[in-house]
Image 1 (cartoon, rainbow, N blue to C red):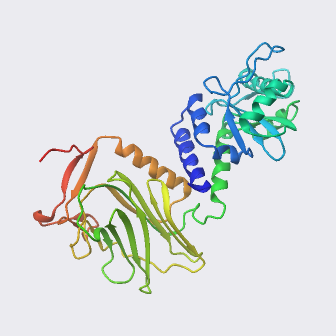
Image 2: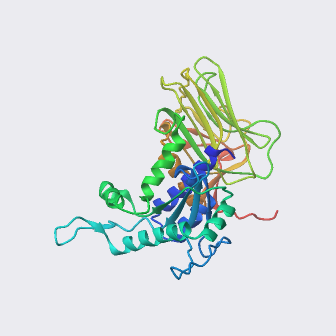
Image 3: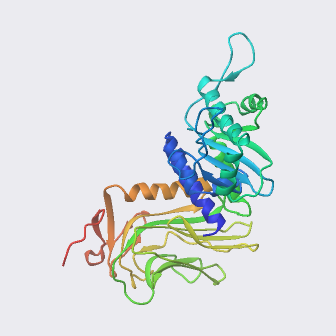
Amino acid sequence: MSSAEQLWIAIYDFYCLLASKNNEEASYQRLFEQHPAIFTVLGIDTAASFEKSSPNTLPFDEDRNFNPEPDFIGAEIEAGILTVVELKTPFVGNITTSRNDGNRAKFKAIAEGYISQTTEYVESIRQNREARDVVKKVLNVSKTSDYRAKLIYALSAENDTHLVNSIMAQRKVPTEIVFYDDLFERMVKAYSIGRSDSLSRDGWCFVTHIYFGDMQASGKTFIADYGSANTDRISVCLNNNEIIFECFDSRQEIHSLKARLDGIGPHYIRFEFSNDSSGTYMSLNVNNIESELRLSRGALKLFPKIEFFTLGADSNGNNGAHFYMLEHYAVNKTLSLIDKLNTFRYFQQKISKTSHCLEFKPKDYMIRQSSGDMGQELDAFKPILRAWPLVKTKV
């Protein structure tokens, strides 16, 4: 998996925690343990956990009469800088308070306690050669030149960032409070470098929640067809466990994006493209992993006529695949990065709940009516409404 893919998965898991307003410290501990890409965004080359349940243990500090258990210790390898990273929770409100005597603001007692704890961990490592040797061995670094601290805590949306930074500037140990929402934005910016799809663009996006039948006809079968001619048409096909989006642009040139499917599903499939003047962008995403990406300077001349839409077969009602459609929707623009995250989160929530789906056998299909709704007048070709999750019955 590429570094960009690793960062994307970290962004998604982080987004889900914040979107659900998760305020359990253990959840963020797991997040950081599972996604080393977060430390890279923080400027840390390598990191390891030293909290209570970790296999890594620092020696007892006799001078301070405690066993230091920082959540993480990281290192900038070339510079030899060690950083203690301590995690607290995001949804805590304002962490500063104004003093009644008119003097400058200070941190609330609980925040001050967290800062003191973090800096004590730093000093314990700095002043204990045995502790430094343990850290160097675990992180596989050869030298230590400086010591710092990062406290991941609270939200910038609920705090005065300038005030917090000005108070922190007075600390003896270089310590940074990193707000959770600011860290999330840093990760998004790091991922967005070199990409042209972070913001919504003119074009189209098609999202499908689908589950495939156990047996499929050999060769290429159809899931959907947009358009009725050989130009500005998009066909969604299945062939040998591959999902294929075959696009015929306004010049009758063919653009084909493919992705291999792992199992029969349920699958989240998102295909989108931009037809603005900023250059070609086409992307096929399966289960939150971008399977194929096309970027070029030339504009993509593809303007599908989605009023002509066949679901379950080709535009003639033939060559259908066997599948269960949980949901299918189209948006007349590409999705912003946050919308991409949200649509996959919605998919995961949807498949975990009781609902319904439509079973399309190879003979079944629906077409868009003049009213805009999908329909099938002939009973012999109507898909069957099924309960979700599917209950398999023996024949």
